Structure formats: C-alpha cells, structure tokens
Image 1 (cartoon, rainbow, N blue to C red):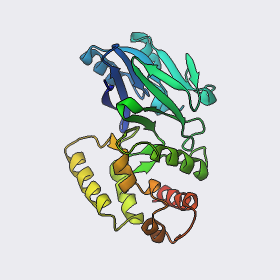
Image 2 (image 1 turned 135 degrees about the vertical axis):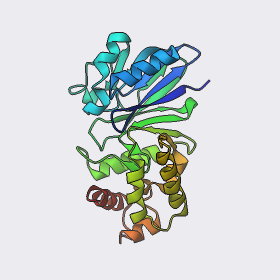
Image 3 (image 1 turned 180 degrees about the vertical axis):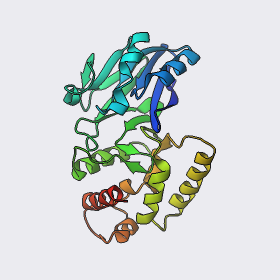
Image 4 (image 1 turned 135 degrees about the horizontal axis):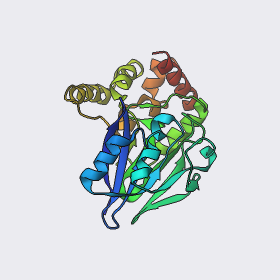
Length: 255
C-alpha cells in the first residue's frame, strides 16, 4: 500500500510533506520550514511522527525542526556530506543508501547543484520523489553552491525515474517559472496549456505542487536542454545539453 502524502504550505511559498504508512502507522516529515502548520496537520490526522527527512541545510527547510521534535520525538535523517551544517542528525545517509518508513523503502539520491550535499528521497513503490530545491515544478533551484554540470547530472538522474513518478518539490514558484519557460520554449503546446492551468489554480489559491515527472519532461525547460527547439531558442543548436542547461540557468538568474 503506497504512502499517503500530505502537502503542507509553510512560510510564504515553501512546502513540507507528511508521508504516512498506514500499515505501520509510521509517518515521515520531509523538510521543516516552520512548525505550526506541520503540528496542526499531524494533530488533525492523528498521525505519530516517526522520521524527519532533511533534503539540505537551508534555513527555510530546517528551521522548524526543534519545535516539531519537542512535541513529536522522531529520528532525524539527512546527508552525511551536509551533517556539519544540518541540525543534529540521528542517521547520516549518502547516495545509494535506503531509508525505511514502515513498509516503504526510499532511496537516497545525491542531487547536488542548488547546494553541495542536497539529497532527494525516491520511494518507488509509492511513485514519489521528494526533490526540494533540485528538480522543481517547471524549474530547478538556483546554483548557490554547485556547478551547472553538477545540477545537469542531478536533473538527468531524476529525469530517468519512471515517468509516472510524482515530484514533490519545495516551493510554490511554478507561475514565475512558467513565465520564464515560455521564453526558451515558446512553441511548446504542452507548456502553453500548463501555464494556463497554473494561472487558474493560483487564482483559486490552489497549489501547483506536486507535479508529475511526465509533465516536467514535457514542459520544464531545465530538463529539455537536449531538445532541438529549446537549443534553437537559445542559439545553441547541436551543443552539449549540459552547456545548454547552463545557458538556460544563466538566463533564468537574470530574468
């Protein structure tokens, strides 16, 4: 039975996620932007928090941890490579390691780029990947620490997951990402339809996260650096996709 996953808006534009395994009653929290909405969701569902999975060290993904743990002692899991700047970890993991939430096994993926040491958690039986600020809805995280080559490698690994994987990313940036995406993929009908759908959702106050990998592959320009029409739009026909990605990321930074 797959994890039941709850999307929790936090701060002004962050998301945390609760992943509940009904068979064991274990519940994992993925990232902790702020405590209050997470604690309210746990109380509302009557769930017992068993694990906290941290994707990277940025404060808007970790700063609510102590307040959550005061009410819900749980096992804190994060990247060994980032342990020196994460909150205190109970379990330090690296690429290729597994984490277990009740009956469900998640695979740790190094997705460095936004930060060095950023990890994602892929739960194949639940068709879910928690990507935080690596692969995002219609975008990817800004390269604060890693290189464009690192991020392209990370995104390529995520892009190779099954297309029906649901992508749980860390921010409600999708509408702004869409405004940029159409500048580098202007003739993409799937992208145009998605931008319209996003506008409707945001007008209704609805979240655009999660998305599906299939939708990201069809519309997210940061995954489409090998596509001829995207390469043409940035004047790099035939170039190495990693270089095209770097150009797209640079354009987004100044958009």
